[in-house]
Amino acid sequence: MSATSIIHALCVCGPTSSGKSDVALAAAEEVGGEIVNADSRQIYEGMLVGTGWPSADAMARVTHHLYGIISPADRYSAARFVSDARITIEEIAARGRLAVLVGGTGLYIEALAGTMPIDRPAGSDELRSRVRREVQLHSHDTLREWLGALDPVAAQRVSAGDRYRTIRALEAVLAKREEHPERASALTKPRAPVTQIRLSILVMHVARAELRLRIAARVRAMFAAGLEEEARSIRARWPEAPALSSIGYAEALAIADGTATRTEAISRCTLRTSQYAARQDTWFRRLRTAHVIEASDRTAASRAVTAAARETAAGT
Image (cartoon, rainbow, N blue to C red; front, side, top):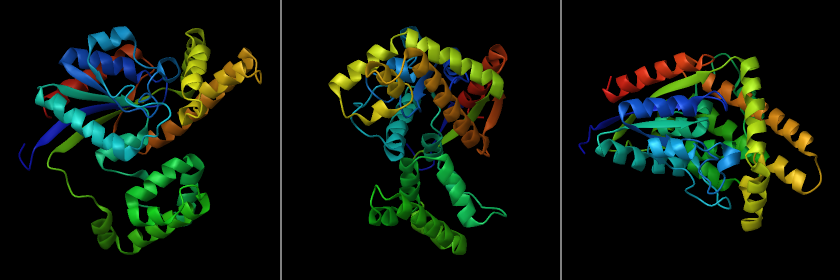
């Protein structure tokens, strides 16, 4: 491809249970697209029920990519996602088809788009207060990835498990960037790839009360579909898998270990999922270039996403 080659792709994101997978599937089917996973848990092999993989019927209707590509015992990163997603999107474009990304991992989506929320202007807030808000919202692994994206050298100097020094390093890097924005940008901005992927980002929004009802129904369905058996099977194969600590699996294994009843596990899983969805919603609401789709009406949301897919496929 030429040095100025641009690939248009659509990204449908939003909190868990917002209906993004269904509308993305319908849109991809309508325009002749292919689905690309942008969820940090659905990349794991064998974790179909607990992470809400697309159904076998959905995968038969539209080609899906980046599902189950690594072992639950392995770790995945935003940097690796960008590499894998870029290759996949370029291959889809070469076939004359539209890549439709779908997922709820904001860090992956913004890394691919080339933006980082912690690197946005602080406005009137003090830098340290801003970092504290990010620390409350995100996991230590996410903070580490941000530090690595902003200043790889600083990230190497700080021990991977040292939360305090990671936070202080973030403050120092951000302060430097604010003091010398042009120099900092030159030092940390990666070389532009030969092919530019231009994402049209849609954020699915569902009213909080409605979303909680959807989450509760989804959690009950997961346990009914065999989440407990899936969790035990994964632990038997990969007993130290980091993925087993994720929402749903930890609760299912608590039943197997006799530390929770099924009712308690479902209740706890519903609460943790709702809390996670709130964090996702906070993240996606800060995407300045995204278009929000009101998704309480599933039919209307599907029409809107399909229309956006047609525009994106046309390169508009």
